[in-house]
Length: 289
Image 1 (cartoon, rainbow, N blue to C red):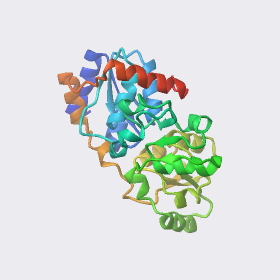
Image 2 (cartoon, rainbow, N blue to C red):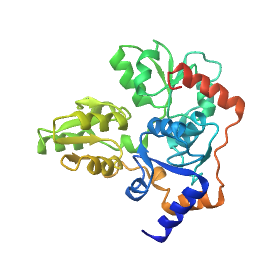
Image 3 (cartoon, one colour):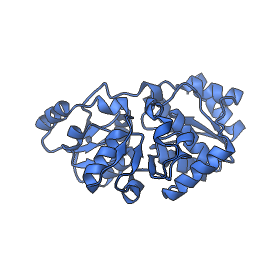
Image 4 (tube, one colour):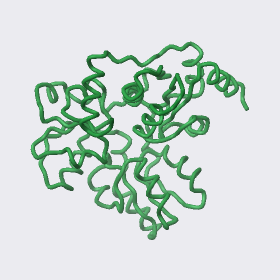
């Protein structure tokens, strides 16, 4: 074990801490985290954990979600500049004074607090009404609009790594691996989703592979998921359409950042209580809590 890992291990015991990581983190961070999963999966794990300190290897909104679901725990975000660009694309006037706003869980607490309800993919289908405002991801909104046959007012937000996956690259892989199932994240472009055999978030994709009799998969999401899939299912093959579908914001957190956050007990996630209360109400309305 390296020196930095020994120090992290010692601090975890001293602080009664755990490290949770998103699938999009670097291979090294995933390997030495106590739990790896999707954003909501990680937040729920943190809330149920007996740990007193939660170190979140993920972008800012994920650390804030953990704090919302585990308000009594100390939540550390090792790099305050590891932010999701999509959440910054939402204009406040699109939300304020509009009681028909439904939010995707990939939102900041300040945005959630202004929404009628906030949900993950599984809950959105029940919440989305005709003519409602859906934020922040326009591709997720367009996906549900087509699926449900409803019209939504969509924001301009999008996930840069997912939009770098192109339909032509997916088609080429399918020609090379004709028996492979195509799995796609709904944050991908519409023409990519039209090619997919299965559409879900990262947690859903992993679950699909776990229960599938197939052995080959074309996976349309950020390339960090490749490590987790190959680690859990070494007997199966995974093909990712684009090496450019990479989130540098997620991967900016390294083991050194994790160590320093526990050593100094700084970079704590704090959410004003009035905002946190309203955000939790929206999460409750969306079936998250």
